[in-house]
Amino acid sequence: MIQNEWRMKLKPYGKANLLKAWIQIINTLVPYMGLLVTMGIGIYFNVPYPIIFILAVPTGAFMVRAFIIFHDCTHLSFFKSKKSNQILGHILGIVTFTPYTIWQSQHNKHHGTVGNLDERGIGDVWTMTVNEYLGSGKMKRFWYRVYRNPIFLFFIAPFFLFAVVNRFLSTRTNSKSHFRSNLITNLGLLSMLLLVSFTIGIKYYLLIQLPVLFFASLMGVWLFFVQHQYDEVYWERHEEWDFVRAAIEGSSFYKLPFVLDWITGHIGYHNIHHLNPRIPNYYLKACYRDVHEFKTGKTITLLKSFRLAMLTLYDEKSKQLISIKEFRKRRIIKV
Image: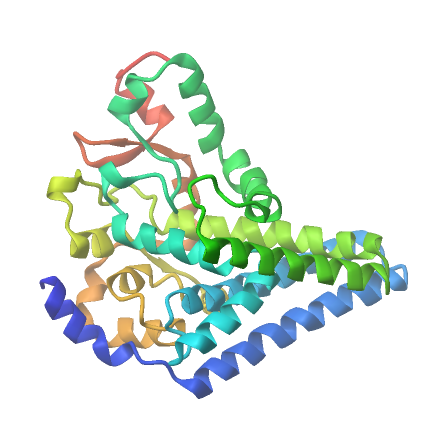
């Protein structure tokens, strides 16, 4: 189907539902706040910290769920009202350590360029082609392999991105709206820090918030990665790039167990989301169930997804994302 046909087919699902939205806000933020309070009480009563640390995993998962709502707000799809989306988006931006307007701008750029080899660099994971890697110096190749190393990409970079990088404005923009968004988020985080410091103490805040942010950022980046980084992922040069193919073939259906699918706001139905980002997350599953064409898309299961972390370079000849091991096996270059 062409883009207009897809637009008409998906249009019935792109309508916000106020009741569903509020139910999702409640079943996300109440458990999230409850788990944070539980961690605080546990520390206060000297519960062994490893137990508190383990509690940071489900708490981080609910932060990811809050981020999915934030994400819908940036697409103006969670509520019917643009203003309501913006207000909730800024609030959840504080909860998730992410400036609303800045992320909205970068993410919209991602939607308009996903799968376009000539438009990489904003809102995506750094991906080099085989030819680009071959033409790079030893230092650049070294830093690229460090960047794509799973330990750095999932266990170091995500936390640094949300905790540090998101606190500053990019040199790419001097937008007043970006400045305001960054200021609102940072002032909100500072207010929370001061509030906790004058009540239970900054030490407790750090012992609770840092591991929660660590696990949430790890899970969030992993979800984003696996939805666009797999063997047969669609990448084309600008003149050959097609929006519909980029959405369907350049975005996966991440088939998760029920609990993980729910906690991640059904974002695994990512091909649908890229075809129509105005579909709120609470309608993605129904859309997949009703529209038969999505059944033929790329499906990635949880167990099979972990090997994707080793895929590193895009080979334009075979139109595949390959690992450094496969790169060497093909004897493209000695590294």
